[in-house]
Image 1: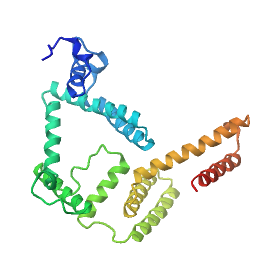
Image 2: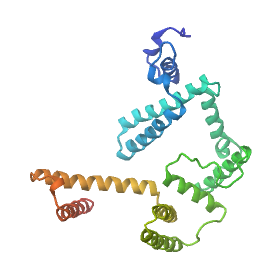
Image 3: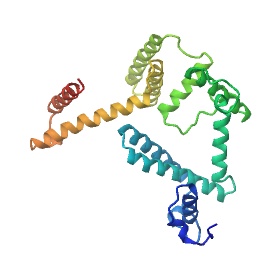
Image 4: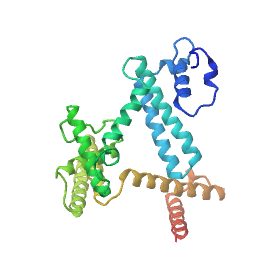
Length: 277
């Protein structure tokens, strides 16, 4: 076993968590660690955890597999960082985290690790998974249907999860056209709120519209978060085309008219459609 003060453990290549755990412990050491790392707490690190998770998704979306390896490492570091702070406070250790998730995976897959048959559809497995999770929530005194949907989720993702939970007990539109009708209704309510110049009412109606739009996407089998990411990427590409084209013409985008930019936007659309054929 490596001695606690033996710095060679930091430089010896290792593929398990022991080296990373030792590095984080040193970074948090009050006497020999990094002042920045020592000053951090759960709340200050949480935004970085969310950011790293999104960078993992970004690497996957772009198919950047070398970057994905690095981003997964950054995300793993967040787990180790939180676990180290928890251990220092006497809450739990990294080993406890690993044991907890291992036990959870076994309990939630009785068709793999238990006596249940694997001969069932993915939909049935999803329903079984949710039934197990519901039992776990009941054990945590979370009896409400919506209990346990994390407050810290991005709003669009949380809306989707809330709607899925409610739909499981029948609180849902049976027909997709009914959701579209509700979306139109919310658009009229937004226009009426806008006419009052009541900013709080406008914000409330915009929230309602986004919530219903997420529900509409769910009924159509579309992930609204992924759809919006795709649109963001599309907007970035097309706006980049406008900038690049104007620059090649010796023009400044800030001086271009809206009509000029719109014409280039349409040109970018035409090029993308031609390239997709």
